[in-house]
Every structure is written in C-alpha cells, then in structure tokens.
Length: 211
Image 1 (cartoon, one colour):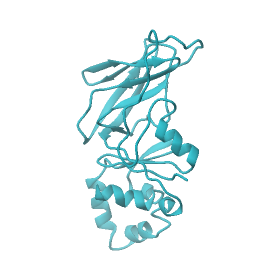
Image 2: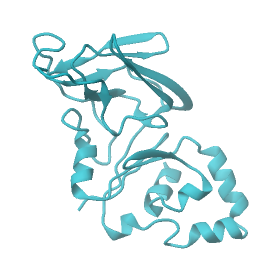
Image 3: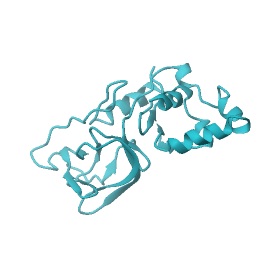
Image 4: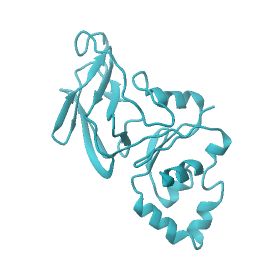
C-alpha cells in the first residue's frame, strides 16, 4: 500500500491509496518516478506529426499534478496533458514545443536551478492557454507507507501544542524560512501554513525539514 509523498528544496507530494500513488508515479501515461529520488523525465515517443493519432476534439488540459503553487522537478521540468492541437510551453524567454502521441503530450523546459523563487509558466495552443502561477523548481519526493506515514501532525498532537504554547514562535520561524515546502494531496497543491500543517503527514513534514 502506497501512502503520502514529500519533496526536498521545494515541495511535497502525497497519495493516500495505491491507485492514486500509481497515478502520481506515472502522471497519467507519460511520466514515471523512482523512489525516493526526484521525478524523472517523461518518456513519450513522438508521433508522425505533432497531433497525429488524436481523432477527437480534445481541449487543452493538464494532468492533475500540474497546477499553480506546485513544485516542478528542476532537473526535468516537464508537464503533461491532453490536446488535439500543437502545444507549447513558455517560461521567461524560453519557449519549447511539446511532443505528442495521440491526444497525449509532454512539454519540457531546460533543466532549472532549484530555488524558492516563484515563477509563472504558460502552456498554450493557438486557441487556448493555461497559466501556472507561483511555481517553484525543486526536488519532488514520494512518501510511501501505511498508517505511520498517513499520521497527520494534528493526529500526533504537535501542531495544537505548538500553536498554543511555547513552540509557536519557533514554528512560525520555520514556516517563514521554508515557504517553498509544499504538499500535493489530491486534488490540490497546498502551501505551508500553520493551519494547513495540521492535515500534513507528520513524517513528510519532518523529512522535508531535514532535507
């Protein structure tokens, strides 16, 4: 049984059930990850032309893990999704064409430096555009386990104690120093706050602090 997941300099990912964890590991049909190493580059063979094989109208959509506020693996910064039109990805002055197979696509940027600085990434076709805001480049790790991995900070009692008593100031300082640690638990990425931490896996949080 696969459980939550965590990332290093910039984020955390979680999955509570085995099918979900497998989906996160494969990112649909296009990417896969090694545990506990960071997510690797998606493997998608190009079709004869950019959109060959997609015989239906398919609007531009991104797979669930690719959202605003996410952590994107800095060594292989790729996003995946579906579209029946040619897809491009833009970041700063960089523009790259996606690779298509049927209605699926993978769009990759050059490797980036891991940093807590947030960025905007645009994924677009000639007809539509998706803007991803507050994206940071870092290392994404999966937290895998059962009940111990799924135990939240609120369950183990530290967050109510820390926010109510003497540890509150230290916790706030940790949060200010590590705004780039983020959690993905379907269906959203969550930025670290005192209240959000209550729902985070305790093991994932302390693992992220130690990285």
